[in-house]
Amino acid sequence: MSAPHHGTPTVTTPSGEFCPGDRVWVHRGTSLRPGIILQSSAEASTVRYRPAEARGTGVDTVVAKNLTPRDDDDPLLDRATEPTLAVGIERAA
Image 1: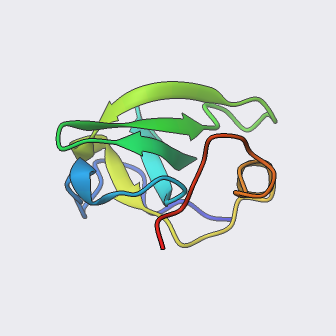
Image 2: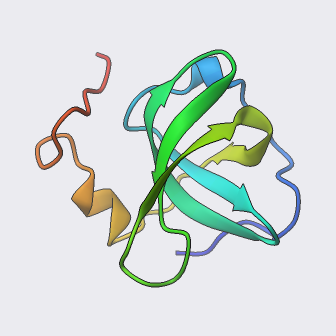
């Protein structure tokens, strides 16, 4: 898994366009961390993400300018948040 070029995300998607289960990059400080959208509104999204290289995750509310869609797999985060394994995450059909 490789994050896009570090720095400010170049693609900004309005928070309201993200759906629960969408994969995103979370811009934190000088790094981009892999995350999964839990809930989203027009203003911001609640995201579960890996704030460091370790296995642990955090949940935070993040504004759209700090989120970028992610195509890469994260073997620790994505497996733990698959809809069949996680409670409360439903992907819209």
